[in-house]
Image (cartoon, rainbow over all chains, first blue to last red):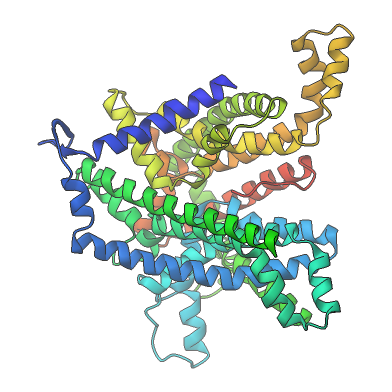
Amino acid sequence: MAPGLGWLVVFMVVPSLLVLAVAFFERGVYGGVDWATPTLENFRRAFDPLYARIFLDSASDAGAATLIALLIGYPAAYAITLQPPRRQTALLFLAMLPFWTNYLIRTYAWIVLLNREGLINRVLIGAGLAAEPLPILYNSFAVVLGLVYNYVPFVILAVYSALQRLDPSLAEASRDLGAGPWVTFLRVTLPLTASGVAAGAVFVFVLSIGNFVTPDLLGGGKVQMVGNLIYDQFLSARDWPFGAALSMVLMAVMMVLLFLNAVAAAGAARGRHHA
Amino acid sequence: MRRLLTLQLGLTFAFLYLPIAILIVLSFNRAGMPTAWTGFSLDWYGKLAASPKIIAATRNSLIVAASSTAIATVLGTMLAIGIERRRASPKVDALLFAPMIIPDIVLAIALLTFFTLIGATLGLYSIVLSHVVFNIAFVTAVVRARLKSFDWSLEEASRDLGAGPWTTFRAITLPLILPSIIAAALLAFTLSFDEFIIAYFTAGAGQGSTTLPMQIYAMIRFGVTPEINAMATIIIIVSFILVLTAQRLNRGRLPGP
């Protein structure tokens, strides 16, 4: 056990603690870290209106992507559970398969589809639905679409496993008591799978808000996520302490969301117990 | 209702697979662009094979993926057996869960900071060291899933019959869990071969350590070129084959990324 855990400590825990430390110092004159001057300035700057704006904008894009991914992924996962067991495994595998191919390539596929000369514009113009190419690439729309595309499989997996854990006799009981399929879904299935779904949603949200590739390639430099901001601090602006502070704020957001979800799930479990 | 749900599932699969399918079809189009179908051609594949940059980047990616997979498979398997034999602790679980949920960019800058502060010169080896982090987590998850149904009394029986711990591992435990170890290794290889952001930050400034995803990123930023379609097709097909083989070996169980 020791070598594996040791590897994670040396190459994950220690580097993360270093980033935390760096966030509390001033940047050096030539771009490094000035270890002689501790400061809280980096965190203050992270909440400066300029950067808070980017945080909020990327939170709203990431939120939109999460919501749409849930709206597509939940019914798809539900439809998979209605299939015969053998086919369920195959369908779930097919849903996850794109996730295992190169992220850059999956994102690039949308540049091919959405650009001015791309397939979607050609089809729209050919069908007479648009007079000139629509500006559907290099904006928030393309970024959200790209995020949804990349993370829908993730939602399907999370919802499917939540539905798997559900006791089928509960829905049966609800139907036996005269509830229609919609009422059964809204009053039994959805609440009982909510915490599994919310856990999936937290991941999609955090991976979206911390994303760098999708806004970079599909946003054409006009859409910024917190991920791009961190990237810039390290590779362009060379302000590592500020980039470190931004990373820590991002991690804090993620931990708060995961914590709230865990508390809500525990509360729901207790509620069921007393009922 | 059932019909509507099945239709929705069909549409979701179309959404997931059509963009990939279009890339694959375009890679065989003589004109290369979606403007019109101008005939079947393998020209773009030929262009790819003739590019020294792409050959070098592919070689680098193979080295990184093979090395990080080898290290992670050994360490991850040991870790999985160690955890499943005793009882898992929440701390160890958290440590193994972290690489899967920390945004890539955060792990990437953390590793860059770490390597820079210890004064390391970056190169292919630092990408390998970094990729082992998330690969250990994946290998451990896959092997642990198999060990959940492992009958530990087999090990006891082997020891009672006088076999030492190493003989027991080699003759009993390893053969039984080998399919899932190979499955884990195939998945780890795929992940490492395709990984971009962490490699980008830990590769250093030298041209010598450009991996294939880094090369693809540079090409995409330059614009839509038909060579990318051809390369995408090869990568998609190879990863599909690797993941399909892993799924077969692992009897249908695959962990989520």
